[in-house]
View (spheres, rainbow, N blue to C red):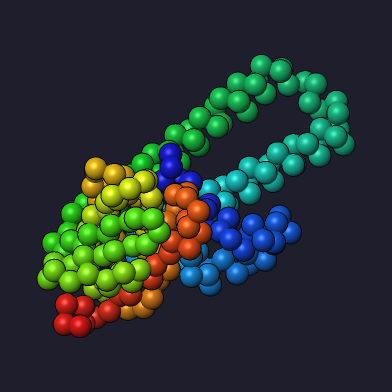
Length: 226
């Protein structure tokens, strides 16, 4: 279920920690414009995450409105609820309603996640995470530090590794996150729909330099000829 959690972390980045709960409405209003916002997707994988997030948000809002209406109904007309057996409230509200909703959301999250992690692409780029920087190696043997160059409009398979501790590779506007685990290579397929620059971070606490372990993904049409 970690994939589902990716949808919410975009609002809980450093500005939220500085502003506290009072800053949440501000970040919510500006979320689609933020460089690290999952609600400003720039690729198909990120679009799937954002779509599921909005379905969950509006679904949750509808459920809250329904519960509020029931509460007010019973508050204003207490006798109305007495005619409904307690078993109906427990079975209907505790089992019949939530189980299909949770099953549908879980299935959608797994389907979207497997689509990102299970695919392949002809272009592979290695992303090596180490305390506290990113090194990217390309098919032609070149490498860059803290700047990932991608072809725009094409699927790219990112092979994520680490020589020291567990890190996590994440470009919120392009897709979900994947762990960089010592001794193991994890893979994720991403695509930037258009040229541009997209912020990336390490999303796994990895020591005192974790907060500064960020990078920039640069997608361009002339990738490979640069």
